[in-house]
Image 1: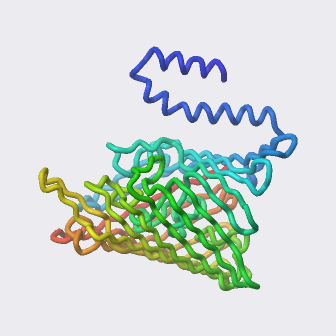
Image 2: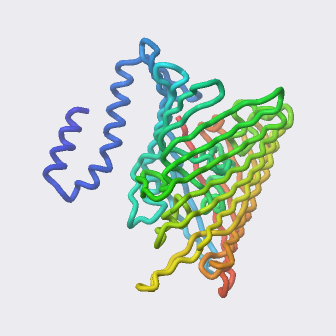
Image 3: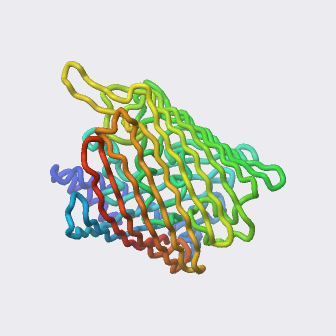
Length: 414
């Protein structure tokens, strides 16, 4: 490993053309070194169920390492009246996650990297943003029972499906509606609180963040304030089963989660709050989410509502004639899941995106109808997923466009 690192820096100094590529490889090299050193100086164990676990000999520090990937084949036909089948094969996700505790179980952490092109290429404005491989870097301090102070970069407490891991979804992807309305990730402070009386439980999340999104520094103009409330009137789900879309745990009694979130991003600079393309000037963007999750004996219903508003949706520079818009509107997704057996799940989903009337000539109204199937080789750790969707889009003043999309992928999480 030392020889590789020396070669790395020699090449960096010699060849300027390779400089940007090598810099991108630097986090991966550091991670490999840290893993190697950690295994050498700690007690370690590995299993398909629990991943790679490291712990200091004095039990002062512990780390769980999870490696996951999602290779995929995707086919599209009928789009723009093209009846030919277009196939594409790619790695949708390749992640490396570290989580554990430091000195006390009340002080925990989460670090996650993504290494595919899709992970490292901007999902905002590529010309003004280069997020790199870091996804999450969060420290959790449980300073009182049931209440944690969270500091760093991670998921905002927005809609429920975003709080779920991609490995716990019943489709290869979250809905398109979720993709365009989600709050995603941001940097700052959060508070997580959980409590209950008898069989009635609730959770509350509050966040004050920069509002710029993943791996971006604050513009100094405003902040993002996000709050989320979850109610569990029928008691807690079994083994965090409320953070997966399907009921692989086969809840023995009905379980229900009702959630609502609100986010105010002051002086946002992206047209989808923390995502999207750059705005001409900052604008306050307000997002509202509501979700429902019901599970019982292998059957589940999962629905989400999304809304985004702003005072000035359309922006124009009178001097240059340049214009842009905020992706305002509403949408939703609803799905039904049923575990055919303890190894397989079938799901049906409907998704809707309805843009604000002021941008209906710029953004299409979209409907998605999908059927998905999952086969579990080893729970969520190793599974096969596929889906097929019928999609229709219509922009004001244009003809409707309809096409089909099919995806097949394998998820490995070790």
